[in-house]
Length: 441
Image 1 (cartoon, helix red, strand yellow):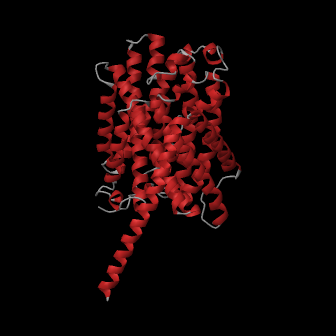
Image 2: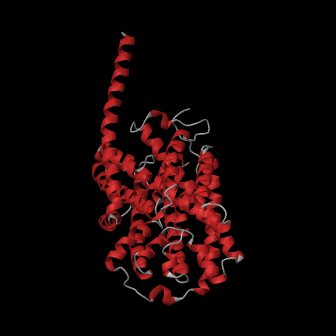
């Protein structure tokens, strides 16, 4: 095994990986916000989050083309703020991607259960999770082809859903009723679920090292991907919240099939078909996020943040240990069967990652003005992104104190690990260096 990734990805495949990582956000998860706010309140949260992701992704594209590395944010933070902050950025990324995966696996189980009620949700989620761990252990080209296919099918599924449900939208359900449900607190609580529409989009940067021509391909892929996601988020929201009862929408793990069931009846073939197609959307994200967190763990190992065996790749270029070990942790959280809490944890990791990335953006501009930047954005973009991200940080902590307390504790544990591991690692490296000197003498 070596520790070098192969350059095989085209711009289209990178677009598919980015959209695929995120597209499950259209099929479930965001709707849990309806337990806290009204459709209007959620729409406000979604517009703000959409502005953030648009400005953030343009800014992130600049850094990713200048430094196309598998560790992405970890590399950006290390280069500008030191190794410890780089480690925290990398840990935040793993937290985001790794916790998003079990939430998606749970929803996969829910969609399968919708089609075959005799199959338990948790069991189905675990089996599918394990299957895609195996698939990811093949080469990245195979993984990218599978990701492209399931992403396209998932998009077609959303087109079919919109075409079937749009004529049945009731504006009173979108803009009537208790418009001020939950007040500002409700909108704050909805922010992590609005983030879920786009969560993981920055993961495309982790595949930058595997792009054939990253300096040209990354900007194209990022821009088209975020445009695709904005359109999908808006139409998905309108076609579900405009049809389904708000209370039902706020509790289901399969909102799209439930919406069609409300229109045509649960046993209608279209509802069942939507569940089947919905699986492609969920699988696209499950598969894409696995690519993301495995590359981040691989990069952390290569940077000497984690044990060296995690940066080994097989003959096909797949980082097998970095795929399998984190996935075992993800599978444990599938057993909790609580998507709302898992989504909040994942979103908090994303918010910390975004904040550190935008700070790194400004420091990189200041400290390395001569760095080649094939793609460059106006400073207005990262300023807007950083301001909104600080707002998200405050509102997410305020609305989820008990959950975030545990997440913050995990950051403390991670920091302790960093200082202990680096101390042990430096001693081991020093010992190896002294042994080499003795051999030469």
